[in-house]
Image (spheres, rainbow, N blue to C red):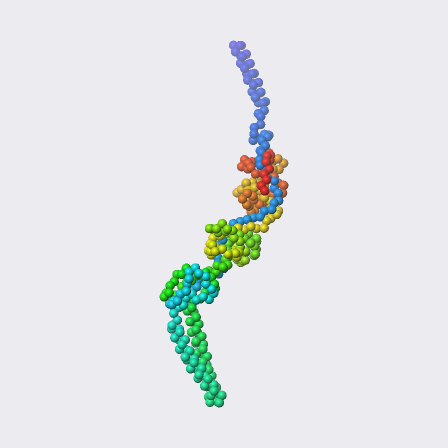
Length: 354
């Protein structure tokens, strides 16, 4: 019995000593726990510097003729003569169509006969007035008759002139959609004339570029079916920004002439604005989009520092920084998804994005 008791006492002492040693042992620090030293991340970086940056944009445009008009008759009537050569160039004042005016011509002849008789009467009474053969009142009545007939003739002649449809300016005729003998009204389209010797280019630019659009500025454009690049000169802008699209309508005058360039053609307009010689640029992949705003990661004293930035315009590989960075800052370009604030960072490669 004493032997068993002694054995239990020894076992208890050994167990107590073993537990005390485990309590006194200090576990080695683990990564991610306080006191642990995080590994240094090697990343590619970009040093911010001032550069010359000229922005270019491409917008859709539309070719329009210098003048375009749908020619309508001023009065209703039947067409008795038609002079529409499809696709041909015509001069200003060319007679395009003639409406029936037989009734007007008859009225004109009647008035002309009456005028001739009234003028003879007025002439005789003028002689009688000189010898006081009639009163002044009688002579005035005959003179009034002459003037009334002349006014009526003028009205008929104006009505006859309205039966002639003439070209308001020189240009190219479109396709004919009417024939001789057709009855037309002022709503009918006799012809469409486009003045294609001088073409214009209409296009819209976003509202933020309105201050950079100047009269006399030269632009370039191209159109489908041709690899040639054309030039145009800005001549005017709309007086207001379109509310629905927040854009400004611009009109330019096409330089030179190309027979393949037709009114209504779709054009791709290239606009290059004056460069900013002091722009701060970074690679586009260095920008971290946030729920509100954007951030960039800087290397400061060997640690990653997140900073808010305000961006401007961009090109295919760079983006302009308006606020948040300064010349000489080192911006992290790679490893942005795994980097965390205040972790040790080392720039392994400096990217030259110029």
